Length: 364
Image 1: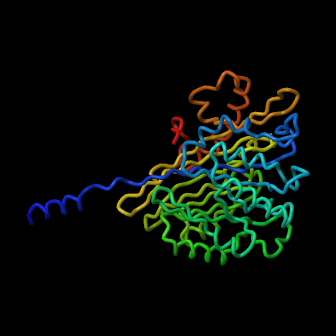
Image 2: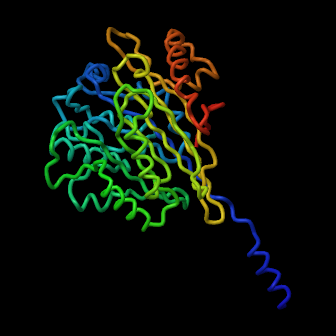
Image 3: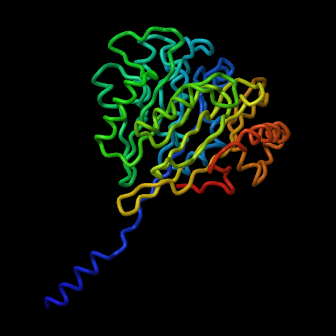
């Protein structure tokens, strides 16, 4: 009996435990220009953004956590675009219904409508059950959501979010907007470490607008964050794509930085601003160690045809369509989409270990 019992115990000890896996998807700036608001307006006075997201939804459905940069407020009517953004709540509902579950809110437009606008934005996100971080009503909200701890099938993520500023608008107490202040970021990362996360992710609003390469301040901030313990850094603000790199430090630790994912959706149509990047990261945890199993990107592009007398906005999975072909109803978009792909791919040639997808990401 002892021999049998010993055999059973040894067998249990040497059984291979299935690896835990999680997929993360990050996309760029969600803008709310006046043209987008007008496009979403329905004949009955309501607003509907669902059509703009219908082609990109399968991409969102490919990941467990889908994170976007909300560069606008839900401050309520009257709605307005640049320079002080407030969009209809229907945009939040449409994003959630399309598969987005996480929004970061610290950027230069966080406080466009002051305290009321920022607090109402948080309320709208809470009512739609979004995971969120970056801006906070008060110290209680800050402690509850900074860092934001996310558990995906046993893989624990600590999410932090910062901005370089709020367009000169002073954030009034008790509100808090996370700024790029090294001492504070170091303290937050230290707090994140106390939760024993598998990965610490920092989403950061930085850089120079419309520049295709990161500036010295971005690189210095990335080095600082990595040295403090960040594992993944995802940037926004330039409104154009910038390169992304997956490398390893001297100790062999993974370090991934995406300097700018560009625009996810906007009314901007200048070169490089009419589309963006979507970064997908697959994590795997084996024997207590979590690593990046794969990191890929795809290019997205905003198609803006005139239909029914008004301009519409469709976010297209451009990389997927370049492989599988455009649906027949989008045939007229082919020339302009290919032009964007050609230009954006020149930037992506500077990437390190983060290729463009080779086949469509499968649905979860």
